[in-house]
Amino acid sequence: MQPESLPTIFLNAAIVNNFVLAYFLGICPFLGVSGKLPTASSMGAATTLVMLISSLCAFLINELLVMLDIEFLRLICYIAVIASAVQLVEMSMKKFAPGLFRALGIFLPLITTNCAILGLALFQTFREYSFLQSVFYSLGAGIGFTLAIVLMAGLREKLELSDVPSVSQGAALSLMLAGLLSLSFMGFAGLGG
Amino acid sequence: MTTPKRPSDTINLDTFLEGVWRDNPVFVMLLGMCPVLAVTNTSMNALAMGLATTFVLLASSALVSLLRGFIPKQVRIACYIVIIATFVTIVDYTIQAISLDLYNALGAFIQLIVVNCMILGRAESYASKHRLGKSLINAAGMGVGFTFALLCLGTVRELLGAGSLFGIPVFGEQFEPWVVMILPPGGFFVLGAWLLLFAWIKQRKATKGKQGETVHAT
Image (cartoon, rainbow over all chains, first blue to last red; front, side, top):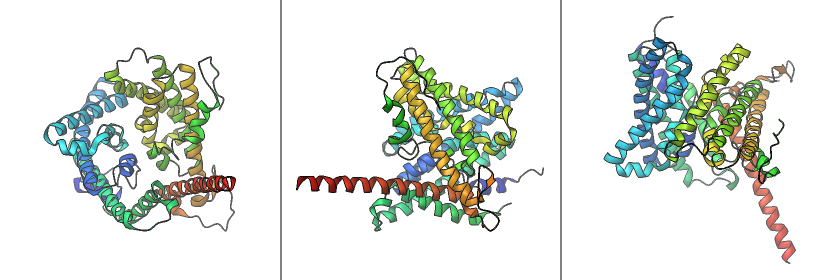
């Protein structure tokens, strides 16, 4: 198989196979934190940061596991790495950006159980990406996640002002909206191969 | 699914039914959305995913409940995650051994059971506070509820998107498959439609109840 070029990997992860809208990874924060635009964008940034850190660590750990021939421990190691990366981001955010820390609230520790991050680590292992490829992949995924959540937040802010039947308010409407967004992202299929 | 019977304090039917209907993890609590949307493009995948999740939920609830006296409060989340990850690894290798096709169809989503918020949520809010029997029954209820929800989505999506049920064609030759339903947007639409249906039923019930009260009062 021909090795994928770096821009292709980036574009694929960010737009064509968007993690949220095509792979359904990270739906919980996508639906939970997309109520307001500023919170959504900072959530996106935090997630991107955690993705980058944990993807790098996961790459190194996978090398180690393969070397020692104990790949069955992969899942446990990955999740431990992600949990510590989240803890790290949480502590530094508390120190340097307390306002943001309070705004994200409960959702910051919940990044640990954001499937997008573990999914990213697993996918890059399955596809046997090199170190540089992994970096681009995680960056693309993070930016894709941010794009999706920011778009969704913008749409939902508009939706607040519109008059919809009371039955469809809340989760049902958000899901329909996500479906439409996902449908429009399908238009990018084939881009970048 | 049979409910395991064990002597414990106050187990009633509600311990089990809570998860199946009133607090259904998918339709009411909106937990564990990622596998719900991702693997429900056919009913077979949905069923397999539901059963795998139920197994992990049962096993981890049992272990968390047994160890609840030993796990220090500060590191409990890490402990739960490791317990869950262990069982998921077991499921992962088991499915790989039983059916490679199924394994390929579900892909990374088997391993992603680890980050299913529903399982961690049960461990944290239920199994760590209740005795073994009660936790097991509650976990079984939640598992059944989760599988039920997955099947709800899976059957609708497969019927509309491929015109078949569990791989068996239902509609005959003339049926034009509604392909978008098995693609990602279909997952959002079908789940949205189910939620809409449940919200509608709830609202109808509420207004009916109110009308009944006013009639009674007059």
